[in-house]
Image 1 (cartoon, rainbow, N blue to C red):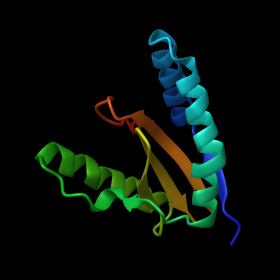
Image 2 (cartoon, rainbow, N blue to C red; image 1 turned 135 degrees about the vertical axis):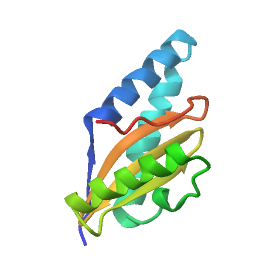
Image 3 (cartoon, rainbow, N blue to C red; image 1 turned 90 degrees about the vertical axis):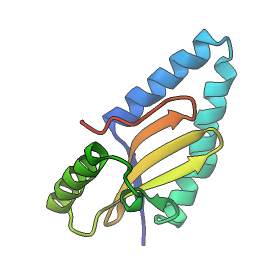
Amino acid sequence: MNIRVELTANFERNLDAIDAFWQECGAPHAYDDLLAELLQTVIPNLEQYPSFGRDFLARTCGSIQARTRVTRLRTRLRRIDPAAEIREYLSGDYLMLYALTGATISLLAIRHHRQLSFSLSR
């Protein structure tokens, strides 16, 4: 199966924020390292093993608000594709969320471990 990996607008905004963070820290090479990791390791891994990451929606929710949001997300996802999954991929200091729908992987979000949460509103 040929898997296509695409970056969403939100993922690109996350990359911009990470770039700005590393610029402020005086370590622009860290952003270059991230891009190299994405191109040389993460994307090839996902193309070869699309279900590599952990099932994000299988996590136990610790609050009513989180359960409500996960339920809404599942509902939206089922409307798009009943077999679609949202998975998480950990690479170094970064956690990524991606959607697996058929033969397409959409990179949804990326965060450095110091960032608190994901926003999937878009």
